[in-house]
Length: 318
Image (cartoon, rainbow, N blue to C red; front, side, top):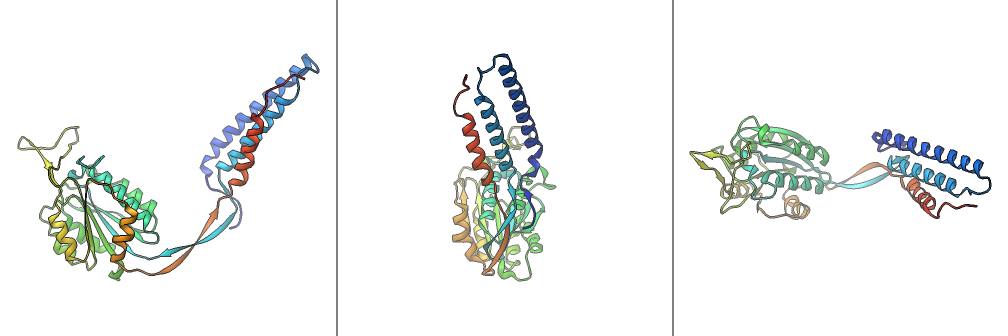
């Protein structure tokens, strides 16, 4: 790495403002001490002025540390598997049911984000679906980009209502590479299907399909509407119950697994490494990534020490 880089460069205005205020306080304190000594010579000592100077310098160094300066780099090795994981996320209205807290969709987003973080070197893509599939993120090895795409999934933004996982499975083919040995499809839903033939669509992909189902399988939950109430059909509130039957058949037909999560909490990292990753191959190579080395400690440690010295003792009279 050549040159000096400020990793938190966007914080410069805040840093400049703090330095300006600190300098102003230092100048005013110096003028006050000088006026006190001129009024009563030999009475006031210089301890307070020294403390202010130490505090200012300490604040300055801590501020530099907050900006996170970097002038060197380091190379780290990460396992590179190169799997393509296509996530199909159900964004139908029933995913707003609150039998899983805060609701099924938010639980799904949390789990998927943690899976992407656990799968170092693998690529995650995202397709949201309701009555039609909507590609949200092409396969990427950047879990932050995948998480940003997850946050954008909202039933209110879907162009067509309903639940057609079969159409989403057919759309997933565009996200898979020609080498299907490194591919995996992850379908997250509450199990509803309105006649889209998902089992047949999954068989046509040629990759394992893992199904994760959310929600209560016995009583279910009411479906929220947009006005703070519940969806009503024929004067009756509509309830959604988790349906595992077709999702289980779908995963079994493709050599995948079915995870009936329900309303419980799952260890996403363990789920990925112990159950999902072994389903597909991928390269066993190692990738080398060069990263800027954080150097903020060189400023934070002396800065904190100076702040401590500036806070020790009391103003004294000579």
